Length: 448
Image (cartoon, rainbow, N blue to C red; front, side, top):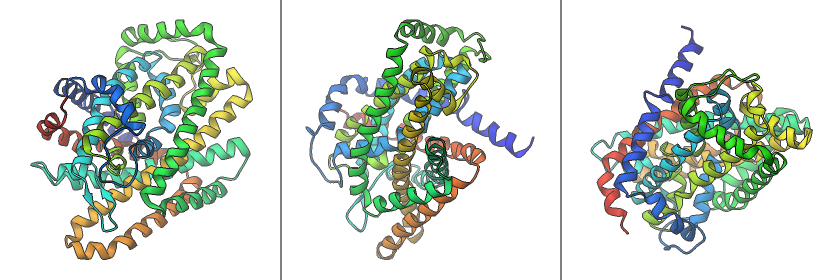
């Protein structure tokens, strides 16, 4: 077996039916019963808290800004390329299993955000440092916090930086004919200007961009559904039918089994909304509120990301018949939009992809920075030494991020996607272990 084959084998195992999927779904089912369906009981409360009627507390940004910063990372390439790949490999039935994973993921997201915010700590400049690593330090396996941080930093360099930069550059090249390195330089300048303002500027930027770009894409997708409205009911029937029977070969589509629909639906759904991976708690832990209130706000994240945005992509691919072309990834989504809008549809998807990639780069820099700081804290140990290093570390990380971003626009990233996908998936292991170890604390915190 060559190196490529080994990477693909490991990637398939981590996101496959014998490891990642049962681990994620099992935790989701456990939390469904432990927390008595908190994602259903507190769904309305989550909207009230998000819109500002929550409890003010310590933190750096508002609950809505924290949600926007977290969604800046989740709403991205996965909502278009990820959904399309799931359908291309698992058939239209994979969309059903994506919904199931999202519903369970709403409870998982609540749990990880509540714990990550509950155990947050202060940085030298007064801002908050929280996430799974902070929660794990209060378990019987505190060293897992450091493991999580190392995995996150490695994953972020690919999945949060160079891979996204490459997607952004390809989008600019397709839409405007701009050379990739030029778009990389322009993007790195804007990214740096935002990042030097810290989490407050990131939260403000995300709160402006995320609602706009989400509504823009949703409007475009709804337009596709309107244009092919006669196919909506048949497509829904196909989704539910194929989820339990598999999909027969049609056109360029090779067909799929129930197991394939489930595997790709769950894996790509989790890849999109990141429920259980432990990334979002790092943004949510900066919110000016208490742990339970911010955990409640986070329930909306998988709902908006997967139940709404991913569903629009999947339905657009279904109603237009693009699912049977044999295409995959972003090309399949572009084909669906082209069938409704002509050549402008492909350009629309490219432009939205640019916005998605830009915001993902912003949030993943913050995630990587928080975990880098946690690693250095463990190495340095003495608080006074860490305090002196803190400004240099923060600024150096932003500079490194900008350089890697430019590099990412000019290289082929297929292998990098697979490697970062592996480390992104591995993040779930210490994060979910922490949820199980702190299940009693979660039940105590979740009252009413």
